Image (cartoon, rainbow, N blue to C red):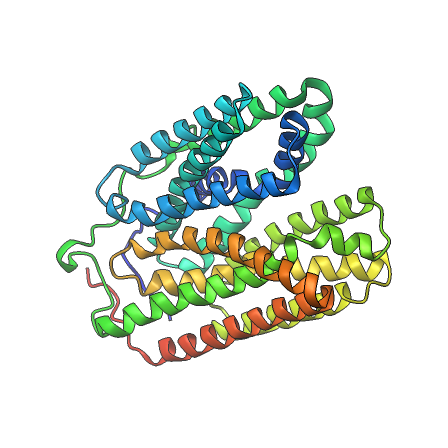
Length: 398
């Protein structure tokens, strides 16, 4: 079941996909390089784990708030203007951190940088949500936004930091924000599809209440899934050390896993709805659960590496389908921006919950929690997908 939003959708072009994917990568910039960024900040400012945790919380709050606030302007303001302003905010905040402010100033800068990236990520969610094939579009988006992170995770600690230190890392991140958030804008439409007064094609035969319920429950499924994923992602290095692996080995495994995560998004983009909505997600979540079991063996580098690959592959793949279903039934074209809020809340709640579980019951219990979140998300998504298959969607008429 594919909803055609227009005969010739201006979003469904390779140039737009790549450009908007880079904007999404700018929105995910801080999250993607967080391990390296925090290591750099800890060394430059002499920060401990608790202080770094406060910085993460500050950035997540800014990210979530702008994701929510963006609902007010994302359909009224030029997409190019939004991206230019948000990218400039991120760049200036990062350059301010380069001046080594006080800890209070650092907290404020992280909040501002988080807000800017939140606006960029929300914008990318809306752009791809206008696609006539949202599952494929979001798969490409999620894969595309991960690739610059893979490059930076290698480039920053191996090349930039040894040669140019703290300042080099900050300048590189500032340049990345400009290159990904501003340079691609000529290939991005200034505005999205016209949805005013049902002038654009909509789900004419779908009750508004049913569409709204589908959107909000898809968001809930995405949040629960992300919460479980990030609950383990945050502690994968420590789990690797429990397995007896060196930091270098763990770093190599995680970098490779991050690349596999990108591949998952591109595979979802290629697959789309060719075999339906439910079957691909069931298979991938089953593989993810197997990955969690392997990670929990604490046996060898082989079981850890294979487990991490299966675990991380699922992230972009599953989100492509949950976000895609949400976008298809978002009649306003704005609520998809709240996908950025799912990311920030999952990033805040997941590690907090799993940290408490690990302290009280150990790593195995945290792995079980993560798997349970995926199963709950799958149950919600499968129920929504079955309902969606029963609804008759009217395609647009020329």
